[in-house]
Image 1 (cartoon, one colour):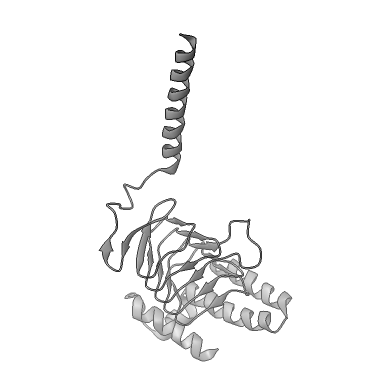
Image 2 (image 1 turned 90 degrees about the vertical axis):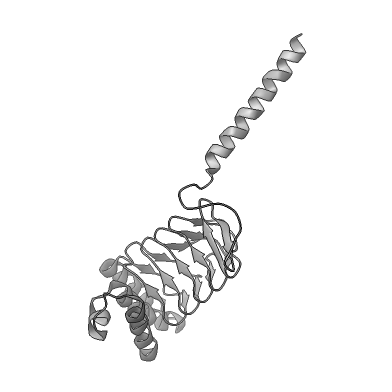
Length: 210
């Protein structure tokens, strides 16, 4: 466990140019503190001391603003940058060298049982405010844009943006002309479809009345 914590601290120092020393990161960074407390809680959880595990995780949430369920599975060198508002569910699995920004949720949809939360591959970046919801996999080396809502599997090496999220790049190749500003609006799409259906019904009624 101590080796894992040392790796977590060094991973932050490698990624954050504002990090000045090992001790500063270890004691003052909320993301590191949350991961450190998670690893302790997870040990109790795996040894069937779930009350203590939840007590530690809830204390960590109050102290850091980051809620990690002690039953989650987290790999090596996870970096939670800033981190306030991050939520990681019980059956979530996170690989190695993952970077998570503030406001991210690795959650469920409420309709699944058993495995309810996503599996995040290695070297994945999940940007600010993104929501990854459901028991599917986000492939290795993928990037999830800020504010994206991911509801289905993401292939390895992909970049996804939008609500709901769509793949716009895969292995460096552009899939479609889409960015985080000019994203399709699913609500407007449905409204347009309803308007077309109404116009079609009006035309049918007019034809019948002739």
